[in-house]
Length: 371
Image (cartoon, rainbow, N blue to C red; front, side, top):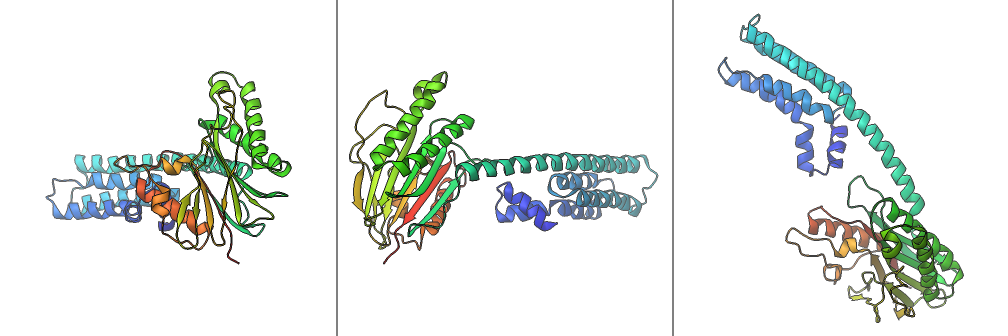
C-alpha cells in the first residue's frame, strides 16, 4: 500500500518528504483524532478528524484500503463515544452517523477516482505509442557515433507536441534534425510528422544539407497550401540540420533555419556555440524572403559532443524571469557520454525553473568517440 500511494504522489509532482506525508495523512488523522479526544474535555468531539481520514484516503488508496480506513474511522468514533459513556445520547448518534455518511461518500469518491485513473492510463498509453511512432528513440550507436535523445513535455501528462528530432544513417553520412513547429495541439503534431517524414526521405536521397533543407521547405509549402486560415500564411518550423560525412568524420556541417544554435562540447570541457554565419528564416517562409541555403562547416574532434535542442531550453526562466543559458551552464563541464549530457541538462533546467517549465524540450546529442 505505501508503494502505491508514493507512486501516485510522485506523479503529482510532490517532493519526497511531501509524498511520505501525504501517504500517511489518513493514519495521522485517525491517531490525531484519538489524541484530541483523550487530551480535551468531553464536550469536544473528534468526529472531524475521523471524517477526514477516509476522505483523504479516497484519492490515494485502493478501494480495499479506503474501506479499511473508513471502517477504522467509524469504529474509532464509536469507541471514543463508548469510552466517555455517552452511548445513547443525541449528540453521540449524530456524530457516529456523520462519520458513517462521510465514510460511505469516501468509497464513492474512490470509485470515481479509480475509473478516472484507468481512463487517464489508457490515454497515456495511446500518447506514448504515438510518441514512439512519431519520435522513435534512436539506437545508442549509429555508424560508429554515440547518440542520445530526449523529449521532455512541459505538461506532466503530455507526451508529444510540435518539437521534433530525428537522426539517420545515410549514404552521405549521419544526418540529424531538431526542430520546433509553430503552434500547439494536433496541428503542430501533424506538421512535425510531415517534417520528419520529409527529412527521412530527403536525407537518403539528397547529396547536400542545402538540398535537404529545400525538400523540407517544399513539403511545408504543400502543407500550408492545403490548410485554411491563419496557418496557411503564417505556419513555419524552426530547425537545425547537421551532418557528419561518411568519409570525413572530423568534419561537422550545420545548417540553421531560425533555430537556437547548437553547442559543441569538446573532451577537455571547452564549449563553442555553432551560430550560423548567415541568419536565415525558419522553414515554411520562402514566400516572405528567398535566399540560398549555406551549411557552415567546423571541426568535430574525437571525444567531442554535438548538442541540439529546442527553445524550451533557452526560454526556460527562473522565478526572477532570468532565461536559462545552456552555453554558460554547460561550459567547462565534462560528460562521459550523450546520455549523461542530456540527463544533466534536463536536471539543470528543472533546477533553474523550480520544476515548472512552460514549453516542451526536444534534445539530441551526438558524440564522436575517441580513437
